[in-house]
Image 1: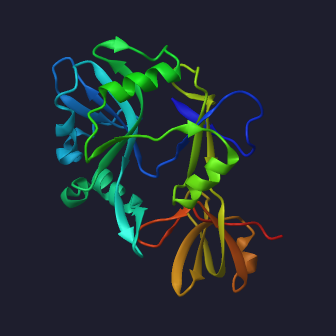
Image 2: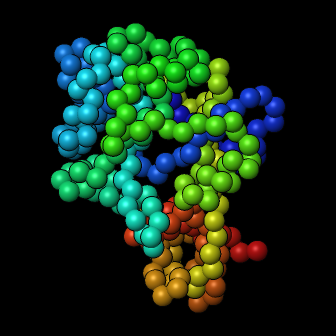
Length: 253
């Protein structure tokens, strides 16, 4: 199940708000054979790359499938911060040391003990999720609260890349739908535009300098006209290595 991006706060109805973690989406499946496997949204078997994380699911009833996010957290400037680069190295490169740092944050459940719960309302699935999930140091259930703009801003202030609003009565349906709405953070910074290039797919990329560091950002076709100028970068959060996540050069005013 996938959400859609929403620029405006939804009008009317009751919504639940959850933090949007910056990691790698994964399904954790405990098969009828009791084997625990990890799958990407596209069906790639990630089991061999998840290290000891899957061992914590050994006591879960066969026929149970959890939906969630692989994340890693470290410390930067004395504060906890998400480390997307570590997750990427663990999942895409199979780096053993990075796999040791992986954590799983569950936000839904598709089946419990062989029973398909996808047609159930989110509230009912969430209750079953909290009963079935083996919460421990490496496994957590996502926090939920009533959705308000104030709560959204408080979550952004904690370093999350955004929030997800969910309709409590919604079923779990594959594909994109408006039962899950994504609200991304929109942080800005001023940087000097150093160079611009275009990749093989036609996407423009900018190299900027921000506080003495080089920052890569997506750009537009006319961004090259502003080389040497100060531009506004829009991003969702700062990663553990200091890079700006989802950075792009804002259009000229």
